[in-house]
Length: 436
Image (cartoon, rainbow, N blue to C red; front, side, top):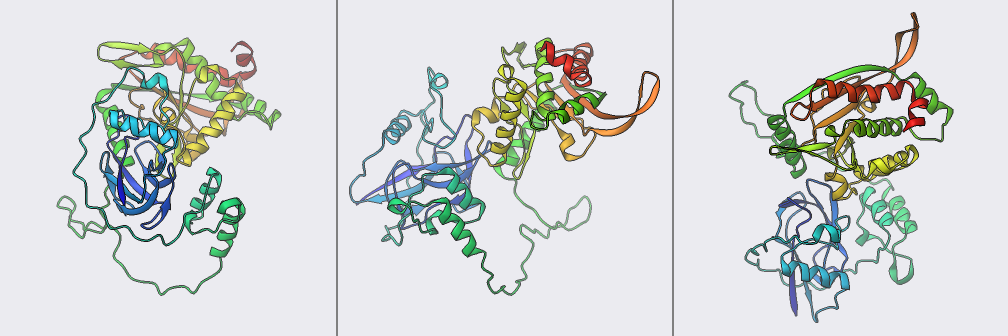
């Protein structure tokens, strides 16, 4: 009997830990090479981690909700004979032995060859091996699941695919199987007696400053800690200034209404933003020590509110897309971010951020710059307001633009020039699109 322990791999640059969200297998389950065994949450996204070993699960390290350090044992798998390893699994093992830890087989965490070339990391010291629990005879076999959609359906319904009986070839779990399991789970059951329990995380300590009792004390997740550090660093390092302007978006709203199946309003604003960055490229860059760096291209970040918190995934190479192309990417990226499926490149590669806080039904915001970027543009809700046009008072569709910028890279004149490019395009979109 051979027992192999798989350590939590490096899931991306700069990540040192991950929180166990949900185990997809249990002790005694039979697993195959490359089968996802656990969902973990990092500061970037939620991912499924596959195992490079096949056999019977003998031990799981880390309860759901527990934070596991990179390089610490994650799962132990016992097998009578070493199971053949897939080419991807063998490549992964070679990289781990070499200390690169790229994690190519991890869902959503592929490392492009161009990124890995010429870059090596120091191998980590493996912590002392923990004693593994004795192998338990397999109680059930994990059904075959090949469709990410099927796995997502089960996850959203709160079901484990291991508990669903597959009716497809060789026990394959299909969408119909998940739907049937969801329907069965929806059958009413006797309600348990409500149990009185203390508030989760309640400490009962008295705050010395206010004299009030703490009702709860909850440790921040790895994601919240990462957000707190990023925002704190932005405030500490960036001398930030903010300008804003009210814009008449009536013509843009009319253009959108004339093409109900066309791009959304945010796609138009995104295209106008890219044009403004071409006119003022210093705002599409970063500060590197004593140097001001500008990028040859725009990865347009979008502030997206998710169940995990606010994230800013980026539409990569936004400067190459048409308005329709931007619309399709914005919709895809927003959905992926909310489902935790955005890639590390999308989550960390933004060069400038567009924040549509109008979707939250607010008019204005002094947003914090997404470090290490140097500016962020905000768009408030579009509402009917009295407006003067050609000397006469009328009702127009008005929105507020706010713009926070790093005063180290430019002065107010540049910021105002950027804002006017976007505002003028919103007020006369047909003319703007004709020259973009």
